[in-house]
Amino acid sequence: MECFDEAGKAGGMFSAYSEGDVLLYHAEAAVGAGQYEQAVADYDAWLSGEREGTDPGEVYRLRGVAQLYAGSIGEAIEDLLCAKQEYAKEDCSFYLGIAYLKNGEYEKALAQFSEEKSDSPDRTEIYYYEAVCREYMGDFGAAADAMEIYLEHHPEDEGAQEEYRFLKSR
Image 1 (spheres, rainbow, N blue to C red):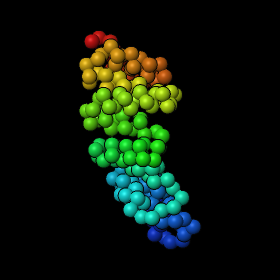
Image 2: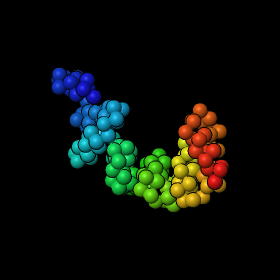
Image 3: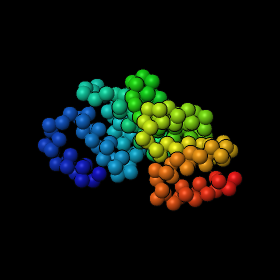
């Protein structure tokens, strides 16, 4: 991030790009550096201006994901729902599911994971989150089944293996 910021201060480097593009690149760099609050601020700045060339729905989706990782679950849900419902952006169901899971809304989370499984059957990490939801709901058999599917694709995940053994013992 510091290198990005210093390059921008040096002048000229970003002159071929619009202010909106620079904000999006900066936000992407912030996410990569784990600086999610900075990314949210950059997305906020992008959304507050008149921008061309980028779909606002994509920016809402990206800001929602950054908010999710920053721990702003309510705001993440709002942005992801906006991106999904108003702009028909794909890839929102997975992150909405995680946000609902973190918010304790397990039925809503499962509905989002189910939708994502239909849309992206190769996204096998969904089964991990489904297992967590089902465990919190007390459905240990279904949780073990989902974790087993996850482990078929991710056998190296030792934490998931331990969780699977726990679920099978219930």
